[in-house]
Length: 375
Ligand code: SF4
Ligand code: SF4
Image (cartoon, rainbow, N blue to C red):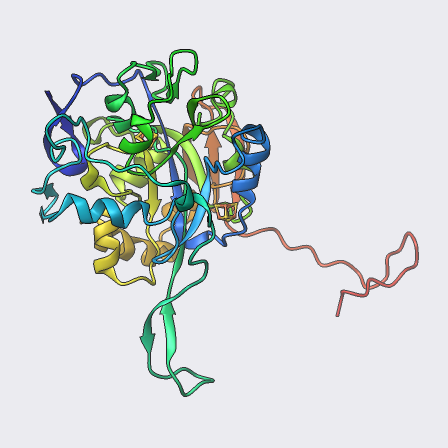
């Protein structure tokens, strides 16, 4: 095994191939606080990519209610259990990654779901955890919290799917870091299904090969955001590019949110894959739960998000989410508006902090009709 640098766990770790970073890395930020579990993203992906035979059960994008929702069943808790103690010392992970914890003869610590584990994609939907004694309108016990976790392939820097494939069928594109699976080479061994800790590779029994999220690369190649991003009703998503912490550029929105403001965090960084979808954690959830899921940066991220309302840069940048189909690799704030910019600094879109207000007369002068929604 090679020794590679993983900034998300604050140390080097063992991986099956030497460190080889792409020219630039596709990445995204999801603001969990805004997701309403409408599943529009799920359907946008489904109708675009997985409506064929053998793909019926596949959800390259899924949204699950945490803590009791999973797709497939128990995908995270099963692996967390197998991985054993996951201890952090400050920003350094002292436990073992799934590469370091693999048994002899294995490349990755993993497990393969049964068919039945995919049977209930909405299991646990809206199930709450925790209890509070009283509420304003109810004197019994109130259930306290849950949140929605939207998930796609993380296009990991150190993909477990790639490491596990005995055929070398999975590759990471040097031009954008998107992880793809070559179905011509695949022989359906399903080692990738077993290895991916996020369970984002799916086996197609009709073709005998595995398939996975492709980050809508034909769109990304045209500087457009993927389907699940542009269709997001809650405007929770922003696609872009990420650098390592020491290369971070504040004018890059993903770098700014992840590295400069430390507001967006990776999902289960302790697994060791350096995943590239970053989450702004939900602010109403108990911190110990969030620390396990997003690592030790959660406390600072939650505090920063709570202050965002009085922080024009942060509030402005968050309003850029979902504002254009085009990718916006740069941004800046001018007064009370935030601008999304192209790589060569062209304005892609401009979002005012407050929508301009226009008061219409009660009677439409053209038709003479009353506007009934005007008080
Ligand atoms: Fe591979 Fe899973 Fe990482 Fe996607 S999330 S790159 S499928 S290991
Ligand atoms: Fe959440 Fe957006 Fe998906 Fe709706 S479309 S479930 S708001 S991520």
